[in-house]
Length: 208
Picture (spheres, rainbow, N blue to C red):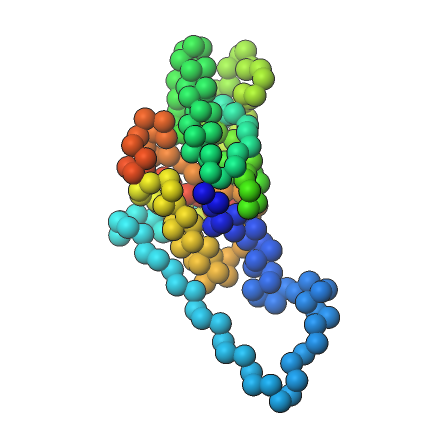
């Protein structure tokens, strides 16, 4: 699976500039249409899909508070995304159990970069405080993103999340909002043990 809409979330600042007249030099140098040409039709209004459950927040503005997290950094192709994320969370859960560290919130994935072929991420679990013995290797301790963001909810399979991201992208276009260059999935259902078609995921889109 190539998750084009997740890629669009990371590329939102570029898309915003192209859509609303912040033209690059290449576009600025394009020749204007001839006077005899008919004016182009106006672009269709973007359609914003409603969430599956009307009680779910969709585009609600929130302020994220930074949390202490233990995380595993990684890279993945889109077709192996769920497998790789689940493996990362299994490794984190094993470390937490081994050290007797309690979770302090739902697991999350912080996407830091994405393109057509894959993405970079931090698979993270909130904890009450940083352990005295810092983990080594691929696992680290840090802080989750903070600041103004929009909140959306996805229900269903991981594969079907592209539909949610399409709706989010359309919402940003319609509201003329500019996203930051990352986004967060917070798993209200455990990403390792929950059947894939029963996922409940809160998506946070930080704003510039």
